[in-house]
Image (tube, rainbow, N blue to C red; front, side):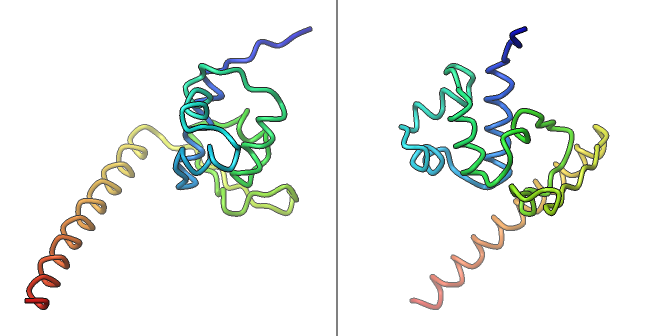
Length: 131
């Protein structure tokens, strides 16, 4: 029996994991020997992905290919501790409610705004000291 693969879901999972890992599309594409556009097609679900390519992507991310296939955006993974030696790697699964997700999103946005303001203040102060 052949199982149908949802390219859009896999691509979306790959994109979200890449973002969680803090990697740019260009970086992942380069490590895979692809153009940025070619890699982008994988993330958008516009390109077929074979098992070898899935394994390569997982290796770039430092995770198991099954973690891509089973990725659930409502779960937070501790990717830094995930590796091929599981069960020695640690995976912390926490399911968040929509309210908790919104709270975290708002906190991250507020902190990001604070960092931007402080960066601008530092730039102003540096300009004053260089005068």
